[in-house]
Each structure stands twice: as C-alpha cells, then as structure tokens.
Length: 259
Image 1: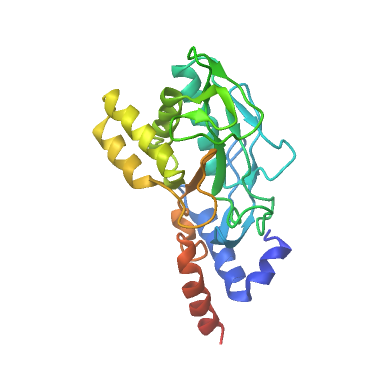
Image 2: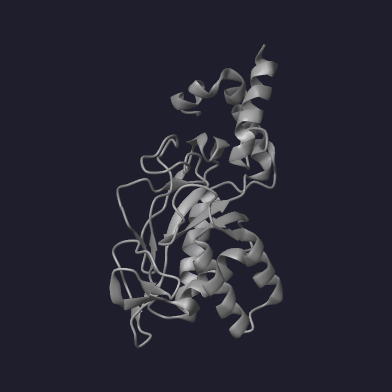
C-alpha cells in the first residue's frame, strides 16, 4: 500500500508509483516468497522525494549504525549492498567494522542536516581508520581527515588507505546494485587513487572510481565520510528522478500532464 505522504507529491505521482508496483508484481523476474526482499519505491529525487516500502539497515558483526534508532531506511538494494560490502572488506582485512551514518527516514522526505537522503537511495558510510602502527581503530563517529590522511583533531589516528580502497572497490564491483555516485572530498579521492595506482589495482575499477567519486558542488565537502548514492531501479524510471537537477524539469512536466 502506498503511504499517505505520497499524496502530497501529486495525484499523477501516486498513479505512476502504483503503476510501478503493478509492473513489478507482474514481472516474472521479481523474486517472491518467504525471505525475498519487499518491493520498495523511490519517488522523486534525493533532494525532493519520498520512500515507500523501504527496509531498515540492521547491525551485524561487520557493520554498526551511528544512530541505531535514527534514519536507517532505504531501498532493499542499497541496504543489501551495504551488508555485502562490509563483509567483503572484513574478509580481506579481518576485524574491520564499517560505521554507517544516516540513510533515509522510513517514509523519506526532509531529513535534518541534509539536503538529500529523501528517497531511499543515499547512505553515509564512515571511513576506516588506523593507528600509527597500522592497526585498525574502531570509532563511534565520523571524523574528518586532512589531506595528509591524519584525523584533524587526533594525531594518533589516520585514514586507512588500504581498507578504504577495499571498500570503494567492493562498492564499485558489486554485481547486484549499481552505485550512481560517491560524494567525498577531493583530497580523499586523490589519496584513494594514489593508493590504487601503487597497489596496481584493476584499471577498470580505477577508471570507474575516477568517474564515480566526486566532491559535492555545494555544501559540506564530505571529508569525514563517503556519501553513497545508488541508481534508480529500472522499473521506477517514471517516478524516480536520477539527478536532483532534473527534479524541477520533471515536476513541471508532471504538472502539465495533470492539467
């Protein structure tokens, strides 16, 4: 059932969302039955949208939530991808625990402290840190790093190049969910690409990292976390706006169709 909040987005949006649900249920390729993920709808854009049928991200041995009772809802594809990549990093670097900040509210919409995170496609993922000897250090908050890699207010903590590159590599090579953008400070991007070059990482993955990692054009530079955004589900292209800059154009088009 579509949530009441969707009505505020306009009758045509609700109709298109309902159509997306109907198509998904009629699609033989959509898994069903016990244990399968629910069908969720990402409506509008990350900066002006809603979420219906989202699922919560839960903690496990390799993943902790910065706010366990906070905004931890998203599309199933994003939630499951975060679970997979945290385990992949731990397999390469045993003892690694990924810290995740905000996702979306259960029904999406405005989220305090953010200009996006409204339609279940965004997640803030903390950096991995190490001590001067190279040992992993667990933290309870997202901490900014300097271009040198040192945590700005803690001289004994450093950005862990190897584990953070392993995280980016796991995200970009995930076979089930497509990541559209990873927002992060330009200095952090340079550190990661320099490490990838030194470690002779896959050229294809490095090329994708160059294209996907980006410092936001406005607002915070994201020097304390990765802001991961997944692509709109293919079946929801009529209701899910991939690029926030397209939101106004889409709204005007919908308004004309409603007349």
